[in-house]
Image (cartoon, rainbow, N blue to C red; front, side, top):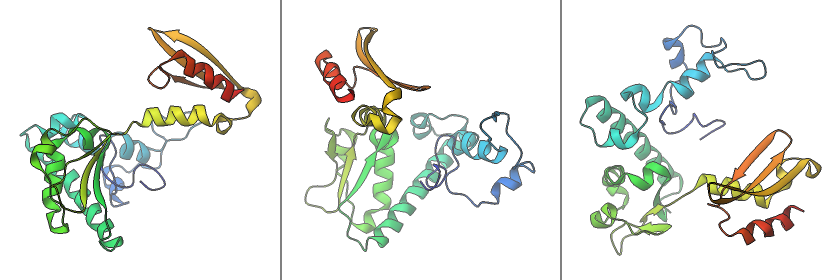
Length: 229
């Protein structure tokens, strides 16, 4: 990821890193406003294409990577192979940049955590760098926040790290309310919804709902009131 999420790996609808001139072969109206532009937000046709009409959905017709990985459709195989090729390219680049001083190859996020086939394929291509996977552990990883799926005794290690971006964003909002705006404009309340205790921070026109996934006991929500003041 660079200045925007477009740089780097291809995503479900994002192109990933491509030749900058590619979009002009797709359309001659790249600089014109897209249908999603508004008075307050200018979105060019180029941005719309690269962010919303690219990635493996453009190749396969679906954003479901699980479906792509398990399919024998040539379009799905192409999308899978492109993603693998881009990932191992980055692994090689960073391995050299770090002069081989690598502690672990870490799989995270929805795809990295859930796709055993993707992990196995990538690791197989990276064996030349010293990555060796335990196939049994990969197929049935331990139910832990960080699970080691590498062969015992081999370094660098191969890990699955279970991440939760929504949880972390919610936690940062609650623990650093000043970052959301002026303190005088911040209000909060404890409420109930569908049996869940939740916390709502409202800063000017921004509302952030934090479910009991973050604060399960009501006491924790009350304690946060003291943090917010």
